[in-house]
Image 1 (cartoon, rainbow, N blue to C red):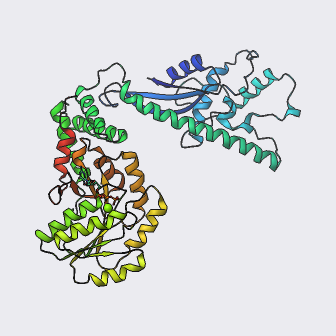
Image 2 (spheres, rainbow, N blue to C red; image 1 turned 90 degrees about the horizontal axis):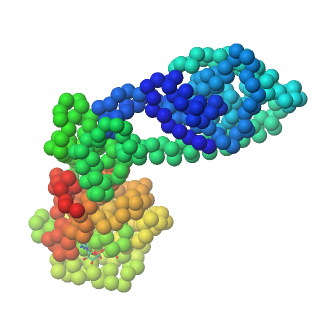
Image 3 (tube, helix red, strand yellow; image 1 turned 30 degrees about the horizontal axis):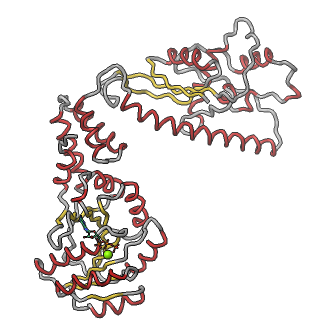
Length: 458
Ligand SMILES: Nc1nc2c(ncn2[C@@H]2O[C@H](COP(=O)(O)OP(=O)(O)OP(=O)(O)O)[C@@H](O)[C@H]2O)c(=O)[nH]1
Ligand SMILES: [Mg+2]
């Protein structure tokens, strides 16, 4: 199938181009009003975007001469136009031969027995009768009522439906790919007008920070809209301020970031090696030394030989009791032993939490009585794609806050923005080094935004 996109001033222009590029059997699969020129479609003229397709695999239409006085071409294009909103939210079944696609295969099919041999001219005649010639303008007149469909057996009908569905699926895939391609092109191949250099600059900067490209487009469109609304000059200063506003609205979800004063149990979950145990030690020190709370530790990490020892060492330094649980059944006893503690930190084993089974297993350990909070610990050095998969798995269970570690090992912070945008989790702390208890602080969104928008020389 050949698919082409046209941006034109009027439908007749499009029809003419489509006819000469793709032939008279091309179908129009979508039309919409777009703005052309400018950046991201703003500051620009209104145009019509027309997507047309030609199914190369479709049977070659007859080349018999058209009966005199009947120009079939305008009819073909106009018919398809009229039919375009038929299915899939405005997308016609373009994989069918043109006339059939526009009106449903049955409308133009003649049963073989009834169809005269070499019936090209007769078929043209039939089509012309069924779809009287309409002027080549937009919007086209609604098509004349199609002739009654020939009778089909249920088997024939279901076979035809199956074939149609398969073609529709194929078409949907192609349209999806095409949409993605066009979205990419819309940023890059803006027509004649110069793209705005400030938007380009911040686009590069946000993408460098590994903010999701789709979100980057949204943010920049927000900047451009704001400038248009306020009739302001869209320069670097304006773009920066607008992005500051948008990012702080996105990140500042409200709600307490720190461990709540009435929280009795704080669970820390997350993939292997992200710094859960180290983070617990840092936060426990803060609770003991700064808030004078009586703290206890529980660890269920019995998979790694050194894991219990690691927490025990921190417990000894901070004078904090430690309980080890081997299964959810041991939990009650552990809580009983720590009943005098104001706050219990529960460390869990880092596992491959892309595996849903481990998450369910862990979830059994998180079912505790008393007010609890669960912190998902993620390292900023993890690829966002993996972070997203892990968070997706955890998100089905009770998660309250997200805590980021290893900020000192990267200068890309886009993952924080992506994660809050995609999952609406409350950011809490951010850890920026191995040193216990110093290298942790409450995540200040303004600081993160400043870092994201900071000029960095290549
Ligand atoms: N650079 C840096 N290293 C950190 C940070 N937090 C923890 N680490 C280091 O990361 C390594 C793993 O830390 P752990 O606390 O054992 O990680 P964990 O998530 O408990 O690991 P598992 O229990 O094996 O899943 C240690 O070497 C820590 O010192 C941080 O913010 N920055
Ligand atoms: Mg650990």
